[in-house]
Amino acid sequence: MSDFESDSSPKGLSRRAVLGGALALGALSCAHPLAASSKAEAGSSGAQVPAAGPSPELEERTVEELQEGLRTGRWTARGLTEAYLARIAAIDPKLHAVLQVNPDALQLAEASDQARRAGQARGALHGIPVLVKDNLASADRMETTAGSRALLGARAPRDAFVVQRLREAGAVLLGKTNLSEWANFRSTQASSGWSGRGGQCRNPYVLDRSPCGSSSGSGAAVAANLTAVAIGTETDGSVVCPAAMCGVVGIKPTVGWVSRAGIVPISHSQDTAGPMARTVRDAALLLEAIAGVDPRDPATQAAKGRPALNLLRVLDANGLKGARIGVVRERLMGYSPETDRVVEEAISAMRDAGAQIVDPANLPHLGEYDADELTVLFYDFKHDLNAYLAELGPSAPIHSLAEAIAFNAAHASTELQHFGQDLFEKAQAKGPLTDPAYVAAREKCLRLSRAEGIDAVMTAHQLDALIAPTAGPAWTIDLLNGDHILGGASTPAAVAGYPSITVPAGAVSGLPVGLLFFGRAWSEPTLIKLAYAFEQTTRARVPPKFLATLPID
Image (tube, rainbow, N blue to C red; front, side, top):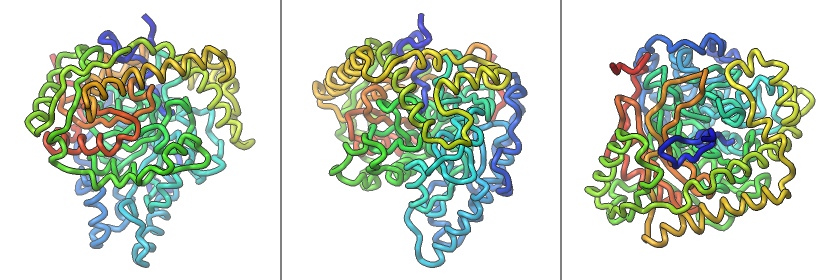
Protein backbone atom coordinates (compact mmCIF):
# COMPACT_ATOMS: atom_id res chain seq x y z
CA MET A 1 0.00 0.00 0.00
CA SER A 2 1.24 3.48 -0.84
CA ASP A 3 2.72 5.71 1.85
CA PHE A 4 0.12 8.17 0.63
CA GLU A 5 -2.88 6.04 1.50
CA SER A 6 -5.90 7.93 2.71
CA ASP A 7 -5.77 9.66 6.05
CA SER A 8 -9.36 8.54 6.36
CA SER A 9 -8.39 4.89 6.23
CA PRO A 10 -8.32 2.97 9.52
CA LYS A 11 -5.18 1.25 8.26
CA GLY A 12 -3.07 4.37 8.20
CA LEU A 13 -2.75 8.07 7.68
CA SER A 14 -1.07 9.59 4.68
CA ARG A 15 2.01 11.73 5.00
CA ARG A 16 -0.23 14.40 3.50
CA ALA A 17 -2.01 14.53 6.82
CA VAL A 18 1.10 15.96 8.43
CA LEU A 19 2.16 18.22 5.57
CA GLY A 20 2.88 21.79 6.37
CA GLY A 21 1.91 24.97 4.89
CA ALA A 22 3.54 24.96 3.34
CA LEU A 23 6.93 27.93 9.86
CA ALA A 24 20.26 35.73 23.08
CA LEU A 25 19.46 33.74 24.99
CA GLY A 26 20.34 37.07 26.25
CA ALA A 27 19.10 38.01 22.78
CA LEU A 28 22.64 38.00 21.43
CA SER A 29 22.60 35.10 19.01
CA CYS A 30 20.35 34.38 16.06
CA ALA A 31 21.03 30.64 16.08
CA HIS A 32 19.75 28.52 18.94
CA PRO A 33 22.95 28.15 20.99
CA LEU A 34 21.79 25.00 22.78
CA ALA A 35 20.60 22.96 19.79
CA ALA A 36 22.37 19.62 19.52
CA SER A 37 23.27 18.18 16.15
CA SER A 38 20.58 16.14 14.49
CA LYS A 39 22.91 13.12 14.57
CA ALA A 40 23.23 13.35 18.31
CA GLU A 41 19.48 13.68 18.68
CA ALA A 42 18.68 10.71 16.49
CA GLY A 43 18.93 7.97 19.07
CA SER A 44 18.31 9.82 22.31
CA SER A 45 15.03 10.14 24.14
CA GLY A 46 16.62 12.56 26.59
CA ALA A 47 16.29 12.91 30.33
CA GLN A 48 13.10 14.13 31.90
CA VAL A 49 12.74 17.91 31.87
CA PRO A 50 11.42 19.49 35.07
CA ALA A 51 7.78 20.46 34.57
CA ALA A 52 8.34 23.78 36.33
CA GLY A 53 10.99 25.78 34.49
CA PRO A 54 12.04 29.38 35.06
CA SER A 55 9.24 31.92 35.57
CA PRO A 56 6.61 29.37 36.58
CA GLU A 57 4.16 32.26 36.93
CA LEU A 58 3.94 32.28 33.13
CA GLU A 59 2.74 28.69 32.89
CA GLU A 60 -0.71 28.39 31.32
CA ARG A 61 -1.14 32.18 31.26
CA THR A 62 -3.56 33.37 28.61
CA VAL A 63 -3.04 36.39 26.39
CA GLU A 64 -5.80 38.17 28.31
CA GLU A 65 -4.02 37.53 31.62
CA LEU A 66 -0.69 38.67 30.24
CA GLN A 67 -2.28 41.77 28.75
CA GLU A 68 -3.90 42.62 32.07
CA GLY A 69 -0.50 42.29 33.74
CA LEU A 70 0.99 44.66 31.18
CA ARG A 71 -1.81 47.18 31.70
CA THR A 72 -1.49 47.14 35.48
CA GLY A 73 2.30 47.26 35.49
CA ARG A 74 2.79 43.81 36.96
CA TRP A 75 4.86 42.97 33.91
CA THR A 76 6.58 44.81 31.12
CA ALA A 77 6.94 43.52 27.59
CA ARG A 78 10.69 43.34 28.15
CA GLY A 79 10.17 41.38 31.35
CA LEU A 80 7.84 38.92 29.63
CA THR A 81 10.28 38.51 26.75
CA GLU A 82 13.20 37.89 29.13
CA ALA A 83 11.12 35.34 31.02
CA TYR A 84 10.15 33.43 27.89
CA LEU A 85 13.75 33.49 26.66
CA ALA A 86 14.81 32.02 30.01
CA ARG A 87 12.23 29.24 29.67
CA ILE A 88 13.45 28.52 26.15
CA ALA A 89 17.05 28.30 27.39
CA ALA A 90 16.10 25.94 30.21
CA ILE A 91 13.51 23.69 28.59
CA ASP A 92 14.03 23.73 24.85
CA PRO A 93 17.38 21.88 24.64
CA LYS A 94 15.39 18.65 25.16
CA LEU A 95 12.44 19.70 22.97
CA HIS A 96 14.14 21.32 19.97
CA ALA A 97 10.95 23.30 19.40
CA VAL A 98 12.57 26.73 18.96
CA LEU A 99 14.90 26.88 15.98
CA GLN A 100 16.19 30.38 16.67
CA VAL A 101 15.48 33.28 18.97
CA ASN A 102 15.17 36.79 17.61
CA PRO A 103 18.34 38.80 18.36
CA ASP A 104 16.14 41.91 18.33
CA ALA A 105 13.46 40.55 20.65
CA LEU A 106 14.43 42.64 23.69
CA GLN A 107 14.70 45.77 21.56
CA LEU A 108 11.23 45.13 20.15
CA ALA A 109 9.89 44.58 23.67
CA GLU A 110 11.39 47.85 24.90
CA ALA A 111 9.80 49.69 21.98
CA SER A 112 6.48 48.10 22.93
CA ASP A 113 6.86 49.31 26.50
CA GLN A 114 7.67 52.83 25.31
CA ALA A 115 4.58 52.87 23.10
CA ARG A 116 2.40 51.74 26.01
CA ARG A 117 3.79 54.46 28.26
CA ALA A 118 2.95 56.96 25.52
CA GLY A 119 -0.64 55.70 25.40
CA GLN A 120 -0.11 53.98 22.05
CA ALA A 121 -0.86 50.34 22.91
CA ARG A 122 -2.28 48.73 19.78
CA GLY A 123 -4.61 46.07 21.14
CA ALA A 124 -4.80 42.60 22.61
CA LEU A 125 -1.42 41.43 21.29
CA HIS A 126 0.57 44.54 22.15
CA GLY A 127 3.72 43.46 23.98
CA ILE A 128 2.84 39.76 23.79
CA PRO A 129 5.73 37.46 22.72
CA VAL A 130 4.85 35.31 19.68
CA LEU A 131 6.79 32.54 17.92
CA VAL A 132 6.35 31.89 14.20
CA LYS A 133 7.18 28.82 12.16
CA ASP A 134 10.45 28.96 10.25
CA ASN A 135 8.73 29.06 6.86
CA LEU A 136 7.38 32.58 7.43
CA ALA A 137 9.73 35.19 6.00
CA SER A 138 10.94 37.97 8.24
CA ALA A 139 12.98 40.87 6.89
CA ASP A 140 15.22 41.08 9.94
CA ARG A 141 18.30 39.35 11.33
CA MET A 142 16.57 35.98 11.59
CA GLU A 143 16.84 33.26 8.97
CA THR A 144 13.89 31.90 6.97
CA THR A 145 14.83 28.38 5.92
CA ALA A 146 11.89 25.97 6.22
CA GLY A 147 14.32 24.02 8.43
CA SER A 148 16.76 23.36 5.58
CA ARG A 149 20.43 24.27 5.46
CA ALA A 150 19.87 24.99 1.78
CA LEU A 151 18.35 28.37 2.66
CA LEU A 152 20.85 29.47 5.31
CA GLY A 153 22.01 32.97 4.50
CA ALA A 154 19.09 33.76 2.18
CA ARG A 155 17.72 37.15 3.15
CA ALA A 156 13.97 37.64 2.91
CA PRO A 157 13.14 40.62 0.67
CA ARG A 158 10.20 41.54 2.91
CA ASP A 159 8.14 40.28 5.82
CA ALA A 160 5.50 37.66 5.19
CA PHE A 161 2.08 39.29 5.39
CA VAL A 162 1.38 37.38 8.62
CA VAL A 163 4.60 38.68 10.19
CA GLN A 164 3.73 42.19 9.04
CA ARG A 165 0.31 41.89 10.67
CA LEU A 166 1.87 40.71 13.94
CA ARG A 167 4.21 43.68 13.98
CA GLU A 168 1.30 46.03 13.27
CA ALA A 169 -0.58 44.48 16.22
CA GLY A 170 2.34 45.29 18.51
CA ALA A 171 3.34 41.66 19.15
CA VAL A 172 6.96 40.90 20.03
CA LEU A 173 8.46 38.53 17.48
CA LEU A 174 10.23 36.16 19.87
CA GLY A 175 11.78 33.76 17.37
CA LYS A 176 11.10 30.95 14.92
CA THR A 177 10.06 27.39 15.56
CA ASN A 178 11.43 24.11 14.30
CA LEU A 179 9.34 22.18 11.78
CA SER A 180 9.32 19.11 9.62
CA GLU A 181 11.84 20.18 6.99
CA TRP A 182 10.27 21.77 3.91
CA ALA A 183 6.95 21.40 5.76
CA ASN A 184 7.12 17.59 5.48
CA PHE A 185 7.12 17.53 1.70
CA ARG A 186 10.54 16.05 1.06
CA SER A 187 10.18 12.31 1.66
CA THR A 188 7.60 9.64 2.38
CA GLN A 189 9.98 8.29 5.05
CA ALA A 190 10.37 11.55 6.98
CA SER A 191 10.07 11.82 10.74
CA SER A 192 7.64 14.58 11.69
CA GLY A 193 9.43 17.40 13.45
CA TRP A 194 12.90 16.68 12.06
CA SER A 195 14.82 19.31 10.15
CA GLY A 196 18.40 19.56 9.00
CA ARG A 197 18.82 22.78 10.95
CA GLY A 198 17.04 21.91 14.17
CA GLY A 199 17.20 18.16 14.60
CA GLN A 200 14.23 16.22 15.97
CA CYS A 201 11.51 18.19 17.76
CA ARG A 202 9.94 16.23 20.62
CA ASN A 203 6.55 16.00 22.25
CA PRO A 204 6.54 17.79 25.63
CA TYR A 205 4.16 15.22 27.10
CA VAL A 206 6.48 12.28 26.43
CA LEU A 207 9.86 13.14 24.95
CA ASP A 208 10.31 10.00 22.86
CA ARG A 209 6.93 10.58 21.18
CA SER A 210 6.32 12.53 18.00
CA PRO A 211 4.94 16.08 18.15
CA CYS A 212 3.43 15.44 14.70
CA GLY A 213 4.17 17.92 11.92
CA SER A 214 4.93 19.99 10.15
CA SER A 215 4.16 22.77 12.65
CA SER A 216 5.74 20.62 15.33
CA GLY A 217 7.83 23.32 16.96
CA SER A 218 4.91 25.73 17.19
CA GLY A 219 2.70 23.13 18.85
CA ALA A 220 5.38 21.90 21.25
CA ALA A 221 6.47 25.43 22.20
CA VAL A 222 2.92 26.53 23.02
CA ALA A 223 2.28 23.35 25.02
CA ALA A 224 5.51 23.83 27.00
CA ASN A 225 4.76 27.51 27.71
CA LEU A 226 7.79 28.71 25.76
CA THR A 227 5.55 31.34 24.21
CA ALA A 228 2.11 32.79 24.71
CA VAL A 229 0.90 31.82 21.22
CA ALA A 230 2.47 30.72 17.93
CA ILE A 231 1.85 30.60 14.20
CA GLY A 232 1.81 27.35 12.24
CA THR A 233 1.03 26.54 8.63
CA GLU A 234 -0.98 23.74 7.08
CA THR A 235 -1.43 22.06 3.74
CA ASP A 236 -3.11 18.96 5.16
CA GLY A 237 -2.94 18.44 8.90
CA SER A 238 0.14 20.45 9.78
CA VAL A 239 -1.61 22.79 12.21
CA VAL A 240 -4.29 20.51 13.61
CA CYS A 241 -2.22 17.34 14.02
CA PRO A 242 0.63 18.86 16.08
CA ALA A 243 -1.90 20.93 18.02
CA ALA A 244 -3.85 17.78 18.90
CA MET A 245 -0.82 15.68 19.80
CA CYS A 246 0.70 18.50 21.86
CA GLY A 247 -2.53 19.18 23.72
CA VAL A 248 -3.28 22.67 22.39
CA VAL A 249 -5.77 24.45 20.14
CA GLY A 250 -5.04 24.88 16.43
CA ILE A 251 -7.09 26.62 13.75
CA LYS A 252 -6.74 25.98 10.03
CA PRO A 253 -8.66 28.87 8.44
CA THR A 254 -10.55 28.87 5.17
CA VAL A 255 -8.01 29.32 2.37
CA GLY A 256 -8.23 33.06 1.72
CA TRP A 257 -8.74 34.38 5.26
CA VAL A 258 -4.97 34.61 5.84
CA SER A 259 -2.43 35.64 3.21
CA ARG A 260 0.28 33.15 2.21
CA ALA A 261 2.55 35.84 0.77
CA GLY A 262 6.08 35.40 2.08
CA ILE A 263 5.54 31.84 3.32
CA VAL A 264 7.70 29.05 1.89
CA PRO A 265 4.98 27.15 0.03
CA ILE A 266 3.77 23.70 -0.80
CA SER A 267 0.49 24.40 -2.54
CA HIS A 268 -1.47 27.54 -3.37
CA SER A 269 -4.50 25.24 -3.59
CA GLN A 270 -4.40 24.24 0.09
CA ASP A 271 -1.78 26.19 2.06
CA THR A 272 -2.74 28.53 4.88
CA ALA A 273 -1.18 29.87 8.06
CA GLY A 274 -3.08 29.44 11.31
CA PRO A 275 -2.89 30.15 15.05
CA MET A 276 -1.82 27.72 17.77
CA ALA A 277 -2.62 28.49 21.42
CA ARG A 278 -3.52 26.89 24.72
CA THR A 279 -7.09 28.23 24.62
CA VAL A 280 -9.71 28.81 21.95
CA ARG A 281 -9.94 32.47 22.95
CA ASP A 282 -6.22 33.04 22.41
CA ALA A 283 -6.35 31.25 19.06
CA ALA A 284 -9.29 33.44 18.01
CA LEU A 285 -7.40 36.60 19.03
CA LEU A 286 -4.40 35.53 16.98
CA LEU A 287 -6.53 34.66 13.94
CA GLU A 288 -8.14 38.11 14.03
CA ALA A 289 -4.70 39.71 14.11
CA ILE A 290 -3.27 37.86 11.10
CA ALA A 291 -6.34 37.78 8.82
CA GLY A 292 -6.77 40.31 6.04
CA VAL A 293 -6.93 40.99 2.32
CA ASP A 294 -3.50 41.14 0.69
CA PRO A 295 -2.86 42.12 -2.95
CA ARG A 296 0.08 39.70 -2.98
CA ASP A 297 -2.21 36.70 -2.39
CA PRO A 298 -5.12 36.49 -4.86
CA ALA A 299 -6.93 33.96 -2.66
CA THR A 300 -7.59 36.66 -0.07
CA GLN A 301 -9.69 38.62 -2.54
CA ALA A 302 -12.51 36.17 -1.78
CA ALA A 303 -12.65 37.65 1.73
CA LYS A 304 -13.42 41.13 0.40
CA GLY A 305 -16.80 42.39 1.53
CA ARG A 306 -17.16 39.75 4.22
CA PRO A 307 -17.89 40.98 7.75
CA ALA A 308 -14.89 41.54 9.99
CA LEU A 309 -14.13 38.40 11.97
CA ASN A 310 -14.78 39.94 15.43
CA LEU A 311 -14.41 36.46 16.85
CA LEU A 312 -14.53 37.36 20.54
CA ARG A 313 -18.21 38.23 20.26
CA VAL A 314 -19.06 34.60 19.34
CA LEU A 315 -17.41 33.10 22.42
CA ASP A 316 -20.26 31.66 24.47
CA ALA A 317 -19.86 28.98 27.11
CA ASN A 318 -23.41 27.85 26.27
CA GLY A 319 -22.73 27.84 22.53
CA LEU A 320 -23.39 24.12 22.13
CA LYS A 321 -27.05 24.47 23.11
CA GLY A 322 -29.22 23.78 20.07
CA ALA A 323 -26.26 23.26 17.72
CA ARG A 324 -26.55 20.41 15.21
CA ILE A 325 -23.28 18.49 15.07
CA GLY A 326 -22.60 15.54 12.81
CA VAL A 327 -20.26 12.69 13.73
CA VAL A 328 -18.14 11.36 10.87
CA ARG A 329 -17.47 7.75 11.82
CA GLU A 330 -16.76 5.99 8.54
CA ARG A 331 -13.00 6.02 7.82
CA LEU A 332 -12.32 8.78 10.39
CA MET A 333 -12.82 6.55 13.44
CA GLY A 334 -12.11 2.94 14.28
CA TYR A 335 -8.32 2.97 13.97
CA SER A 336 -7.76 3.37 17.73
CA PRO A 337 -10.25 2.07 20.31
CA GLU A 338 -8.82 4.34 23.01
CA THR A 339 -9.11 7.39 20.77
CA ASP A 340 -12.70 6.40 20.00
CA ARG A 341 -13.36 6.21 23.76
CA VAL A 342 -12.20 9.82 24.18
CA VAL A 343 -14.45 10.92 21.33
CA GLU A 344 -17.48 9.06 22.71
CA GLU A 345 -17.01 10.89 26.01
CA ALA A 346 -16.74 14.17 24.09
CA ILE A 347 -19.98 13.42 22.21
CA SER A 348 -21.72 12.65 25.48
CA ALA A 349 -20.49 15.92 26.99
CA MET A 350 -21.76 17.90 24.00
CA ARG A 351 -25.13 16.19 24.15
CA ASP A 352 -25.38 17.02 27.86
CA ALA A 353 -24.56 20.64 26.98
CA GLY A 354 -27.57 20.81 24.68
CA ALA A 355 -26.12 19.91 21.29
CA GLN A 356 -28.20 17.88 18.85
CA ILE A 357 -25.92 15.06 17.74
CA VAL A 358 -26.47 13.55 14.29
CA ASP A 359 -24.69 10.21 14.42
CA PRO A 360 -23.48 9.14 11.99
CA ALA A 361 -23.10 11.90 9.41
CA ASN A 362 -20.57 10.18 7.18
CA LEU A 363 -18.81 11.91 4.29
CA PRO A 364 -19.09 10.33 0.86
CA HIS A 365 -16.01 9.90 -1.36
CA LEU A 366 -13.45 9.74 1.45
CA GLY A 367 -10.39 7.99 0.05
CA GLU A 368 -11.48 8.56 -3.57
CA TYR A 369 -9.45 11.73 -4.09
CA ASP A 370 -6.26 10.91 -2.19
CA ALA A 371 -4.17 10.22 -5.30
CA ASP A 372 -5.59 13.33 -6.95
CA GLU A 373 -4.65 15.48 -3.95
CA LEU A 374 -1.09 14.23 -4.19
CA THR A 375 -1.01 15.00 -7.92
CA VAL A 376 -2.15 18.55 -7.18
CA LEU A 377 0.48 18.98 -4.49
CA PHE A 378 3.29 17.78 -6.75
CA TYR A 379 2.42 20.28 -9.48
CA ASP A 380 1.74 23.12 -7.05
CA PHE A 381 4.94 22.53 -5.11
CA LYS A 382 7.20 22.76 -8.12
CA HIS A 383 5.43 25.86 -9.44
CA ASP A 384 5.02 27.66 -6.10
CA LEU A 385 8.43 26.87 -4.62
CA ASN A 386 10.19 27.97 -7.80
CA ALA A 387 8.28 31.26 -7.66
CA TYR A 388 9.19 31.81 -3.99
CA LEU A 389 12.87 30.96 -4.45
CA ALA A 390 13.17 33.13 -7.58
CA GLU A 391 12.44 36.20 -5.44
CA LEU A 392 15.41 35.57 -3.16
CA GLY A 393 18.52 37.62 -3.80
CA PRO A 394 22.01 36.44 -4.71
CA SER A 395 22.75 35.60 -1.07
CA ALA A 396 20.47 32.56 -1.33
CA PRO A 397 22.32 29.25 -1.97
CA ILE A 398 19.42 27.98 -4.14
CA HIS A 399 16.82 29.54 -6.44
CA SER A 400 14.78 26.54 -7.65
CA LEU A 401 13.51 23.12 -6.66
CA ALA A 402 16.12 21.55 -8.94
CA GLU A 403 18.86 23.39 -7.07
CA ALA A 404 17.38 22.30 -3.73
CA ILE A 405 17.58 18.68 -4.87
CA ALA A 406 21.19 19.19 -5.95
CA PHE A 407 22.07 20.90 -2.66
CA ASN A 408 20.68 17.99 -0.64
CA ALA A 409 22.61 15.48 -2.72
CA ALA A 410 25.81 17.48 -2.22
CA HIS A 411 25.21 17.72 1.54
CA ALA A 412 23.80 14.24 2.09
CA SER A 413 25.63 13.68 5.38
CA THR A 414 23.52 16.40 7.05
CA GLU A 415 20.40 16.76 4.91
CA LEU A 416 19.82 13.14 3.86
CA GLN A 417 21.20 11.35 6.90
CA HIS A 418 17.84 9.87 7.94
CA PHE A 419 15.63 9.90 4.82
CA GLY A 420 15.74 10.90 1.18
CA GLN A 421 13.95 13.36 -1.09
CA ASP A 422 11.63 11.21 -3.19
CA LEU A 423 8.80 13.76 -2.98
CA PHE A 424 11.12 16.49 -4.24
CA GLU A 425 12.14 14.34 -7.18
CA LYS A 426 8.56 13.41 -8.11
CA ALA A 427 7.49 17.05 -7.96
CA GLN A 428 10.44 18.11 -10.11
CA ALA A 429 9.31 15.66 -12.81
CA LYS A 430 5.93 17.38 -13.17
CA GLY A 431 5.06 19.88 -15.89
CA PRO A 432 3.21 23.22 -15.79
CA LEU A 433 -0.14 23.93 -14.13
CA THR A 434 -1.77 23.78 -17.57
CA ASP A 435 -1.17 20.03 -17.83
CA PRO A 436 -4.52 18.19 -18.26
CA ALA A 437 -3.59 15.78 -15.45
CA TYR A 438 -3.28 18.67 -13.01
CA VAL A 439 -6.45 20.41 -14.14
CA ALA A 440 -8.48 17.18 -13.88
CA ALA A 441 -7.06 16.27 -10.45
CA ARG A 442 -7.80 19.70 -9.03
CA GLU A 443 -11.37 19.68 -10.36
CA LYS A 444 -12.00 16.23 -8.89
CA CYS A 445 -10.60 17.23 -5.51
CA LEU A 446 -12.81 20.30 -5.26
CA ARG A 447 -15.96 18.55 -6.46
CA LEU A 448 -15.69 15.50 -4.21
CA SER A 449 -14.53 17.35 -1.10
CA ARG A 450 -16.90 20.34 -1.41
CA ALA A 451 -20.23 20.04 -3.28
CA GLU A 452 -20.37 16.23 -3.09
CA GLY A 453 -18.66 16.01 0.29
CA ILE A 454 -18.78 18.46 3.20
CA ASP A 455 -21.45 20.73 1.69
CA ALA A 456 -23.70 17.83 0.73
CA VAL A 457 -23.66 16.19 4.18
CA MET A 458 -24.12 19.45 6.05
CA THR A 459 -27.06 20.42 3.86
CA ALA A 460 -28.70 17.00 4.08
CA HIS A 461 -28.57 16.99 7.89
CA GLN A 462 -28.83 20.77 8.43
CA LEU A 463 -25.58 20.74 10.40
CA ASP A 464 -23.59 23.51 12.02
CA ALA A 465 -20.39 21.44 12.08
CA LEU A 466 -18.87 18.02 11.60
CA ILE A 467 -16.62 16.33 14.16
CA ALA A 468 -14.11 13.49 14.28
CA PRO A 469 -10.97 12.68 16.28
CA THR A 470 -8.21 14.93 14.96
CA ALA A 471 -5.67 12.09 15.08
CA GLY A 472 -4.65 9.18 17.28
CA PRO A 473 -2.24 9.56 20.19
CA ALA A 474 1.40 10.35 19.43
CA TRP A 475 3.56 7.53 18.10
CA THR A 476 7.16 6.78 19.11
CA ILE A 477 9.74 8.81 17.15
CA ASP A 478 11.45 6.61 14.57
CA LEU A 479 14.15 8.24 12.45
CA LEU A 480 14.88 4.93 10.73
CA ASN A 481 11.41 4.13 9.40
CA GLY A 482 9.57 7.43 9.66
CA ASP A 483 6.15 8.11 11.15
CA HIS A 484 3.72 5.47 12.42
CA ILE A 485 0.42 7.25 11.96
CA LEU A 486 -2.82 5.42 12.77
CA GLY A 487 -5.39 7.83 11.41
CA GLY A 488 -6.76 11.34 11.35
CA ALA A 489 -9.41 13.68 10.00
CA SER A 490 -7.61 16.64 8.43
CA THR A 491 -7.94 15.79 4.74
CA PRO A 492 -11.59 16.62 3.90
CA ALA A 493 -11.34 20.25 5.07
CA ALA A 494 -7.78 20.59 3.79
CA VAL A 495 -8.59 19.51 0.24
CA ALA A 496 -11.75 21.62 0.19
CA GLY A 497 -9.90 24.66 1.53
CA TYR A 498 -12.47 24.79 4.34
CA PRO A 499 -11.82 25.64 8.02
CA SER A 500 -11.14 23.27 10.89
CA ILE A 501 -10.25 23.68 14.56
CA THR A 502 -8.89 21.12 17.00
CA VAL A 503 -9.47 21.33 20.76
CA PRO A 504 -8.06 19.07 23.51
CA ALA A 505 -10.65 16.38 24.25
CA GLY A 506 -8.87 13.99 26.59
CA ALA A 507 -5.90 11.65 26.74
CA VAL A 508 -4.78 8.09 26.12
CA SER A 509 -2.18 6.96 28.67
CA GLY A 510 -1.26 10.61 29.21
CA LEU A 511 -0.97 11.40 25.48
CA PRO A 512 -3.35 14.16 24.35
CA VAL A 513 -6.18 13.50 21.89
CA GLY A 514 -7.93 16.34 20.07
CA LEU A 515 -11.45 16.71 18.68
CA LEU A 516 -11.70 18.28 15.22
CA PHE A 517 -14.59 20.61 14.32
CA PHE A 518 -14.88 21.37 10.60
CA GLY A 519 -17.45 22.76 8.21
CA ARG A 520 -18.25 24.97 5.24
CA ALA A 521 -16.07 27.75 3.83
CA TRP A 522 -15.94 30.93 5.94
CA SER A 523 -17.63 29.24 8.91
CA GLU A 524 -14.86 30.12 11.37
CA PRO A 525 -17.20 32.05 13.72
CA THR A 526 -19.52 29.05 14.06
CA LEU A 527 -16.69 26.55 14.54
CA ILE A 528 -14.93 28.75 17.09
CA LYS A 529 -18.19 29.24 18.99
CA LEU A 530 -18.72 25.48 19.22
CA ALA A 531 -15.08 24.74 20.01
CA TYR A 532 -15.06 27.34 22.78
CA ALA A 533 -18.23 25.94 24.35
CA PHE A 534 -16.77 22.43 24.16
CA GLU A 535 -13.55 23.64 25.77
CA GLN A 536 -15.42 25.37 28.58
CA THR A 537 -17.63 22.32 29.12
CA THR A 538 -14.86 19.73 29.27
CA ARG A 539 -11.73 21.61 30.42
CA ALA A 540 -9.76 18.70 29.01
CA ARG A 541 -6.33 20.30 28.59
CA VAL A 542 -3.71 19.08 31.06
CA PRO A 543 -0.21 20.66 30.99
CA PRO A 544 2.68 18.42 29.90
CA LYS A 545 4.96 16.59 32.35
CA PHE A 546 7.97 16.14 30.02
CA LEU A 547 8.23 12.39 30.70
CA ALA A 548 11.27 10.73 29.16
CA THR A 549 9.20 7.79 27.93
CA LEU A 550 5.71 6.39 28.41
CA PRO A 551 5.57 4.20 31.54
CA ILE A 552 3.69 1.31 29.96
CA ASP A 553 4.61 -2.35 30.51
